[in-house]
Image (cartoon, rainbow, N blue to C red; front, side, top):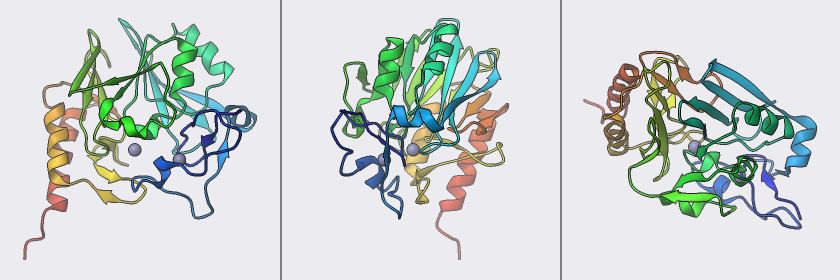
Length: 271
Ligand SMILES: [Zn+2]
Ligand SMILES: [Zn+2]
């Protein structure tokens, strides 16, 4: 019995004697099945060809992503807060080196995940670090491998610690969430936005999509809802979902400008 991992999206399925017939996350219109067909791997196979790479944005913020790029290219972030370490989002590969290094940094006190494209091998990470993993209840149907560590939270915000809050923005998925750390970036405030708010190539703007690979835009009311969800929170730094998707400073202003730019771009054309 092996817990197979989809090579296109990185999602792990319950242990079985053979790979699943299909991956519902990839078959959803927000992801895709490659033209050459679906492929499967396992933690053991991944460890032969891949390693996890680390990027320190600053001493309290460390990104972790598998190298060479695997699945969607997801990047998790370890936030070293005054109230404990928070692991935001998750990646498929969890090797012995990663467990050793994260434990040496103080382990993990809480895990939370933005949306199904980052569920990956969340059960194994939560088990390795002996923590609950918080995912929004509105995306419950997309949990391919249920487990006792998964906590489904409901509503609009979840307080993880005195200065860390998970915020449901919706849009990309109904339960799509972001993380706000008020003490991050030297007290300037950090938002980890994942796919709810996508950091654009110039790192001075953001954008929004129902599907990034299939280029399906997000309707205006959904974008306005994300803006309303973030409005009460101060932040200066914003992280998307890859190593290089970060707005180093001025992120709240960049977000405001980008919401206006996006809504103008999808507005009906004036004749
Ligand atoms: Zn998949
Ligand atoms: Zn996504």
